[in-house]
Image (cartoon, rainbow over all chains, first blue to last red):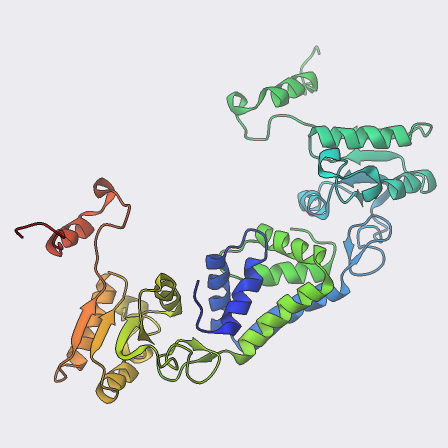
Amino acid sequence: MQFSSSLLENAVNEFARLPGIGKKTALRLVLHLIKQDAPAVAFFGETILKMRREIKFCHRCYNIADADICSICANSMRKQEMICVVENIRDVIAIESTQQYNGVYHVLGGIISPLDGVGPDQLSIEPLIERVKKEGVQELIFALNPTVQGDTTIYYIQKKLQPHAIKATTISRGIAFGGELEYADEMTLARSLQNRVPVQNFVAY
Amino acid sequence: MQFSSSLLENAVNEFARLPGIGKKTALRLVLHLIKQDAPAVAFFGETILKMRREIKFCHRCYNIADADICSICANSMRKQEMICVVENIRDVIAIESTQQYNGVYHVLGGIISPLDGVGPDQLSIEPLIERVKKEGVQELIFALNPTVQGDTTIYYIQKKLQPHAIKATTISRGIAFGGELEYADEMTLARSLQNRVPVQNFVAY
């Protein structure tokens, strides 16, 4: 792409560095910003600068936070003795959006994946073990992606917690709500048969 | 979406204001920026602020410029007496990228479209007429989209320039390079038959 303005070119190049944004999309975004009021664009730029400068990670659960402890950990209405273990912050946002969970979280920052060079030491597994031992945690809910790496991570944490008696569950796997049986893969279908649940109001089960 | 951090939420909302960027994409972009070094993100934010603050529009052709006159108008190697009339800045970039054009431009800022409330007065048509009359322009190349609005705009400019003798052309319409005849619409196919070009090296044409 040939630009007649270096200011435009620099801005397009910066946007094109973002994941999933190519040069053409970047140009569209920049030309959109040029059409906006200067104060609106200043607010856009400053919001990003402020976010990067001030954002913190919760000392307890490694979620994104505005203070040293995130708003979920600091909320006394939530069950502090129930921890949902997730891979990243996006998973926290996804689960929070269901409005069905009232415990706290622990963000691992990834899952164990030797092929990608991610071992237990790069993740916040040790702090999780500490939390379980010190905070009187009663239940761990593993909400990791249903992959070999996810299962390995659960197995590793389970081993580490071995002498400690604690209730641990994973979120259920199965056919997605509204999904069709014939399009489900065999693994999913097999697991959903194994983990079948009783139908309410039937006499014999 | 439920956010545990207002800094994160504000940044996501700002990104989601951009065209074609939804909340999920915005979240992905913001989480990407959080993972980057603070100086890299500062550079990103400041490049955008600087661009919006300092960008100008060329006084002559209305292209985006770093100074009062854009680098294309200021380039003495380009034919100043040949003007390519385009709808917007994106078209300038597209034509420049072909590296086949050596004249200058005039950016109308839109095309005449009564249904969208765009009349000749909102566009830079009057300055174009002035340029043609004063600068000794020899050829106008209309590179507008082949729509009724595009043709109306060309017709309007032609009427305005009536007493003035000037060569005017439009870029050719036809089957796209590598396109297939059977998928072309009738209008395009009809026009490309009307505007057929001689085949080189044939004896009789």
